[in-house]
Amino acid sequence: MPDWVPEWLQALTLGEIALWAVAVAAALTGLRKVWPSVKAFGVFVSALSELPQFMADTRAHAATTTATLAAVKHEVLPNHGGSLRDVVDRGEAVTGGIVSDVAELKAEVKTLSEKLGKDHTRLAVLEERTQPRDAQGRFTKGE
Image (tube, rainbow, N blue to C red; front, side, top):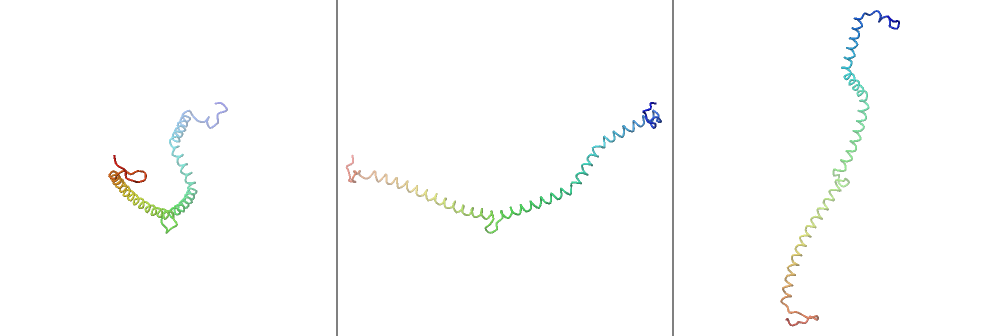
């Protein structure tokens, strides 16, 4: 054998070398099949190491969100004058009164319009019956 071959390799027979080659190939094949599981386990361990910081951040965010929701709740529920809900309720009451007044005014305008139409018709009939007058208001003879 050449000098560059190690002594332990020189002591092996061809059958042993073949057996070692098959064993290495089997180990690489097994590693290739197991690698996704090993990789997933590494990701899992990494996630576990980041879990305490994630939980602390989540608690801080939940506390902020709770405070914000409490402020919003304070504004949307009635509290006898100071909340947004109370302002909306007062605006609704005023608007309801205005709507009622407008409905009444519409009814009055309709009644007056009808009366004006009837009066206009009656005046036209009266003007037809009356003799014509001149510029000074004196009766003139009809033609």
